[in-house]
Length: 633
Image (tube, rainbow, N blue to C red):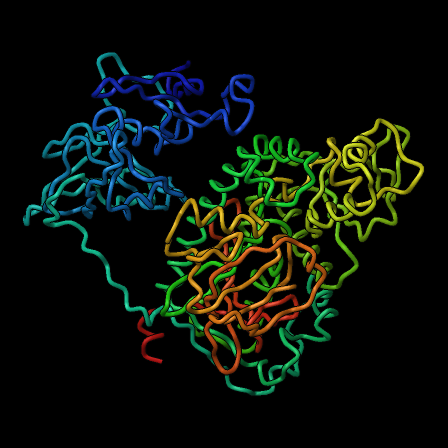
């Protein structure tokens, strides 16, 4: 190392030092991880005495491991490190007792103590995730902490902590810790104590802030003038699909939009992040328990492929969409469209263009960051060759595919569009090639994985034989089918095969069993058990249905209220407690949020006069307004 150069980071897994309580602290320099020692995502999971600590060697893993070894308790799993600040109890491992956990804001008069957790908010160096460290020394002018995933260098001889952070005590006795890193912010510290003096009080939120509102811009004939750019391929396809420059066919709705408060959107953002993590935990459970996996009606010959996909590509999901009911009754999720989600263009582009043209300056657009999030996700996707975008001949899929193409190309990835499968062929090496003879290696698709599975079920007498044919070393006498592309071992598909699991409605009863009475979830079962709460009615859903098809809603007396048609009537069903959408001006309004790379990326609303949102439901603009503005309206 020459003078002035920072030392090289220690290899992943190197012990950096030993903290108080004889707890090792490790390097989390992931680029240097040994791929033979860590071949898949599961190998990064850290356990002690059978108790899950977290992922090696992240900040949350060290915090939980230190508490377990020194205190005998752990905090519950969280989607992001900053979510620890919301927890209010810890679990004693040996007997599952709960002990109180209190949060103290940075600057609190209850000073931190050795062994408490220091929590950073998301932002700056800790964008998206936040951060947690364990305080091991407290002084009037500094605290010493241990942490992982910040710096990867071996400690100096005799050192017993990762770093020291400046601190001060103000004139009122409040204790303030400096976050140090640019853009970073310390929320405060967490103490296991019975004494809640100076702790963060339970924040009661005015539930009226969760009620959506209808907005209207003044009609000055704006809808008669074009407001989309037909020179852009995605916008031209959108105009063609909609029959003009519009978001809806109903002229009365051309000037209508919906309002959501800052508070409600913050909760939706938190819900998106937390639910994504919960669905991932449930997916992990399903793929490690064949009795659970059997509920998903996936050909058994594909089960090993699913498990390999999860192990190897756990972090390669680009985007998905959650569907919510949001009102003063709470925030409840209906399902997670983790595979082949739609409405990205309307959210990330069209609703913003609408606001510009129609002169709507009420609040801000909740889709403004979606495109940039998609670009970043694609930059981290690992695609190293031409990516083929495969879509059907449906006009909605066309503009959706073109919008996604713009994000993929902005990420520096070359793309080719393939409409349908009629132009595909085999080459002499048995690879599927496009019309130019280029082998297909990377694919992003608008088709759902279930479409390929339907083809496998319908056209093949023996699934195992069919899969063997798909991966044969030479071509077939028949033209390539969709399944021949998506299920080839030498083709990498987005979204990954494992997204079949969180997208399948069979995940909903499993989620409920893992997280019973969670505030974002609705009770869901595989059967209408005697204890199933039907006071408000229930919904029957096909496990692999799409676009609101074959949904049946029943009242508390088992009388059918409404149902939708579709092609999934033969599917197994799950039952979910009925929790209706809020109705405004005769429209049922569903809020959708997008996960991008596993975190919140944007939001929109879909509306319909009927109780069930379907593929034909309109998407009208959504605006995020200040709490005070919403309450004043």
